[in-house]
Amino acid sequence: MRAFAHVGYERSRSVDLDPGTSKVALFVDQSGEPTHAARQLQSGYWTSKLGQAEDIEHELLALESDVYGTVAVVLARPITSLSHDADAERPWPPLTRLH
Image (cartoon, rainbow, N blue to C red):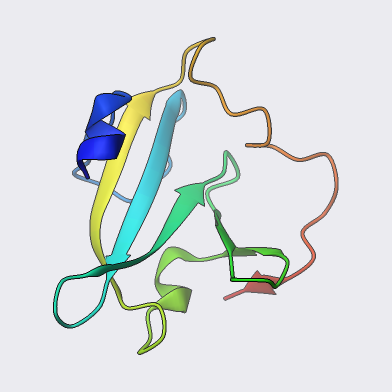
């Protein structure tokens, strides 16, 4: 979490879409070890890279499992010209969408 704090992220009270805000969800296993991270898109869906598989779009809790763990915290920071992720809104449709 310190790495995200170093680039301006703070704990968010909500997983809901907040225009102008970049959000990241951190997943942990049963022992509290980080296992995965997902980034919220401006559509409200979340995007993840699943190992060697393609990037997917999903509802946040759709990945909670023994493999990826559970969502422990959602972090947020304002989107600025310096922090905006150019890939946040891809012009092509998602390859896979989990609900």
